[in-house]
Amino acid sequence: MASLNRVVLVGNLTRDPELRFTPAGKPVATFGIAVNRMPYTNEQGERVEGVDFFTVVVFDRQAETTHQYLKKGSGVAIDGRLRYRSWQTEDGQKRSVVEVAAQNVQFLPRGTESAPGGPPAGDYAEIDIPPIEGGEDYPW
Image: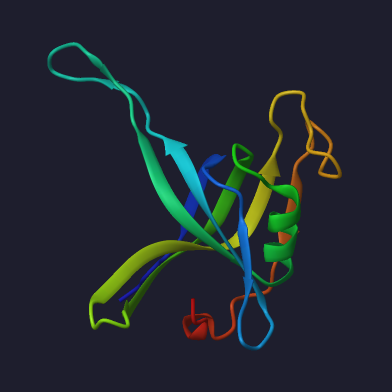
């Protein structure tokens, strides 16, 4: 049976990227992204809009670059895969989360402004990272 796990999202950061390091010293950045839903008209003739929120995890050099150049409100295009993690808290409760493991992050311009030291307005900066090796072993 064939299978495919791919996610493409375009939206804005809901918080500044948080940079951490694995015990092996590999950088990992985590941030939230908001993606607008396509508006539609419901049966009562009312226009309905919405927003979906996702957690994105970025690894290695791209994590450092994301932390350096992106901030809350920055526009991004994410290409990655869904990843399910589960763990048990110190008090014995089971927890789980589905997040986006980014394999490619494109910084999108925001009108005519540009972040200091970041990509110039109107340009797209694409940063490729190698495939995630042992990604399931990252303990965050």
